[in-house]
Structure formats: C-alpha cells, structure tokens
Length: 431
Image 1 (spheres, rainbow, N blue to C red):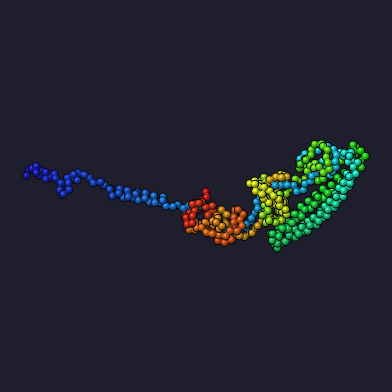
Image 2: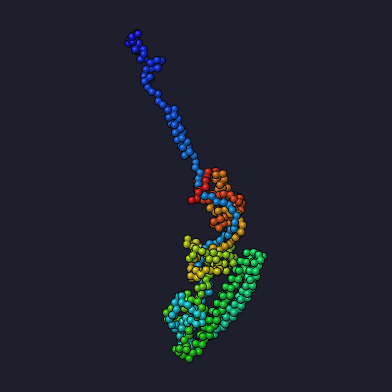
C-alpha cells in the first residue's frame, strides 16, 4: 500500500472547492429570515400606531332629537304670599288707651274679642266740632255698609251663575261634548266667584264694625262723666282670624284714626308677584300659575286673579330703574302642608303666558347664535353638520322650530368649541 506522504495528508486536509478554509468551520445561523420578518413587522406596526395616533379622533358629544309635543312659555319671577283680606283696627275716638293685651298670632273672634279699651278725654265731651265729626262718620259708615251689601248681593248672583255653569260643564264632560279648555274656564270662574263672595262678606263685616264704632263714639259724647266705667269704649275685633301685627301695644293717649293693630285670616292666602311691565302685558286673567320654592318640592297650582292696571318704579339690585306690575294669584286646591304658609313668605311663581298643544320642538341646548341667525349642529353620518333654522318661542328647556329642521333629526347638545362643520363626532355613552 502506498504510504501517506505529507503532501497527501495536506491534500486530504484541505477543503474542496473555492471557499476559504474558515467557512468550513463556521455553522450558518438558523431562522435568520424569521427574525427579519418579525423585525420588519414590528417596525410597520409601530409606524401604523403612530399614524393612527396622529389621525383626528371623533369628538364625544351628547345627542338630542327633534320631536313634537306641547309647549308652554312661562314668566318666572319671585313673589310673596299675603293675606287677601286684612284690616287695620284704629282708634275711633281720642282718649287714653289701655295696654293692648294681644300679641301677633293670637286668635280673635269677630264682635267678641276686645282689642283695646279707650277712656275718652273730657275735652272731647265739650267740643261741638267733635260731635259733628262723629255724626259725619256715622253717615259715612252707613253708606259704606250699604255699598258692601250691594256688592255682596252682586257677588252672590255671579256665584250662582258660575255654580250652575260649572254643574252643566261637569255633565257635558261625561258625555264628551266639551273641550278641556272650556271645562277649565268654567272651573276657574266657579272658584273665582266663590272667592269674590268671601271678600264681599268680609267687606260687609268691616263696614258693620265701622258703623258700630262710629255710633259708640257718638254715645260717648253724651256720657255724663268721662271718668265713669260706662264711658269706657271697648274696641272689638271686626273679623275672625288672627292678629298679624301690633302697632301700638303700650298704654298711651290716642287720637282718632291711630292704627292699633292689624288682623286677618292666615288661611286666606294669595300670591303677589312683581312682574316687569313688558312681561305683564302677555299675562291674562285666569292664566295658570305654578308656585315653587315655597317649602316643598311639589309646586302649588294657582290662577291669576288680577293684573293691576298701574305700574310702579322699582330699582333693581344693579341700580336699574324698572317698571313693574303687581300680579295677584289665588291658590287652587292647596294641600294641607300649604297651610303653614304665612303672610309675606317668599315664593317663586311661573305664570303661563303662551301655550300650544302640538309644536315641533328642539332642545334649547342645541341652539347657538351666529350674528342674528340661529344655528345648530346636526348629527349626519358620524359627522357634525352646521345648519340654520328659524326658532320660535322657548320655555328655556325646549324651543319651537318654525323652519329648518325635520322631525326625528338628531342634534348636538351643548357642542364644545372643538366641534366644527364636518368634524367627526360620536355619541357619548351614558353609564
């Protein structure tokens, strides 16, 4: 056998081919292509995320709908309660008045409760002028009483007609041949006439009291001795109710006509509101009123009895002179809790000045002004579209649409400043 020479050994150890000798000793890496693919995928994903982050996101907004429904426009103003019929008891003659024993809130009975006792002064017994004045007061009181009687008769006649009309209305309602408006008007007239009768009856009692006091004052002038007990003149309460205010409590010398105290019936409450004259023009007698913030969450129902014809000037908190008008309202079927209301309690009144049963309505929060025009953003295809519209009356929460929007259209409520025409928006999810 041939021997392995060094040259043969060198030939055997040398690698075949043209590759360098060190390549034979190095192992080629496995999965290189997969790693490159993952690297490029990560780079592309990062670029996509950056691109998505730079893209504008839809703005979250609240959406509302244009719908049909009733609309009532109110005039909202602060008001206060007041006792409808009140009477200031004054001294009928000059003399020494004893201390008044009554306090505010005490109950009084007509013709029985003694409010004050007056001892006539001696000078008035000898003064012919005082006698003539006393006789004149009697004639005036008699005329006042006669007028009060006629007023009461007229009120009772009107009440009788209102009662008959209300009874007929109830029968017609059963058959369905009368509208709700006519029924409400008949009920309103019925309640108003009842209150007018009570007021006329109160005025008659006051007139009779003044007549009796005038006659008693004249009798005192004929007393032989002003110091006698018979010469003392007791002043009785003209009406039943409670003492509202005591003007003169201490014993003192009084003159004719000096106010002693004020009495009235706290159960007979009405609402007084000072309305701006420009708003009072739209308020009509019999308009519906809601009395709020009186001490309970449930509002009280009332109706307007009188809009006074004369306005007065009042300076606002900002120092602006305003012309205001007194609007008086009567409570309608008040609950038992409302009996806690007293004289001059603060309330808030909402007087209805306009109403329509079926109008096209849009939420007021969707409207904004551009110059003199009303605008709103409509939700259309995921984008906000600015449109113009003609708005009518509003109650602060809903606004009448005269022209520019259709039924069922979705609008943006209280859109932020970032919302522009054509911007992408999405509805905010309410949890």
